[in-house]
Length: 61
Image (cartoon, rainbow, N blue to C red; front, side, top):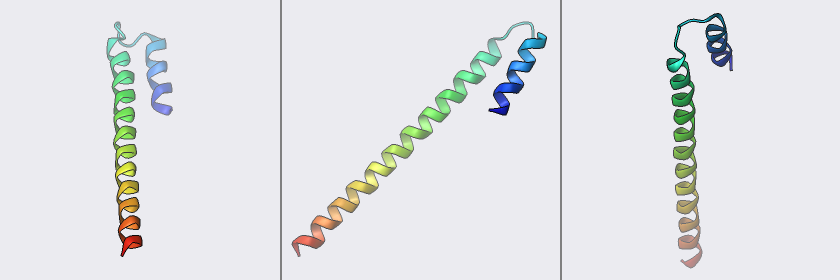
């Protein structure tokens, strides 16, 4: 959150003359967080699938 405030302050004072880099920075940060959350959800799903398979294997023996 503090990074966002810092970028907003720089844009407010007019540094630099074009704000393309700031938009790209915010967009890339959003993509990074989104990608990490997708990886975490996939890893959690795989762990649940393994636990389910293990419980079925143990129960049938």
